[in-house]
Image (tube, rainbow, N blue to C red; front, side, top):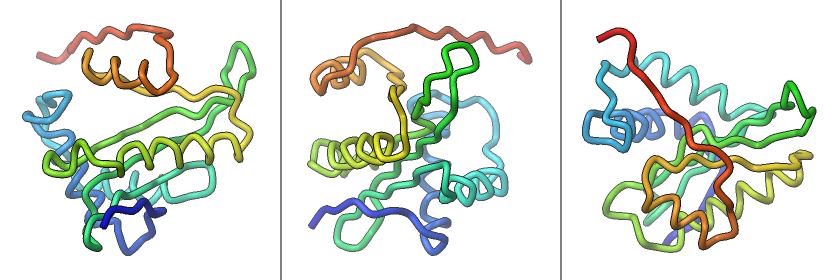
Length: 149
């Protein structure tokens, strides 16, 4: 059975494990650096605080997905913005209802916390197409250049 819950301190180790897979060289961003588990753990603890959201998708009482979001006031427009920090579903849990439940839960949380806008990250065109299907519109395209190679 799938459900979505708010992550608590008791889930931190599971969040760190999923974050390490998310940030691995095989993950969506193909991270080229070692992931510092202590830093990820500290961030997970912070994400469980009041200005942040940490959700878990659960399947048979096991975490199979995570979602992190934070709030900020845009420095130019003053808009209250809810921004995705991370969203990961274990490969075997993809395609079910839990991912969309996490997104809808995050949208409700953002509204309840005064957000006027929600920003999501699309690492590829497949994810961008999904966002389009659920009511999001493309706002920006970000580019990165690794400087330390």
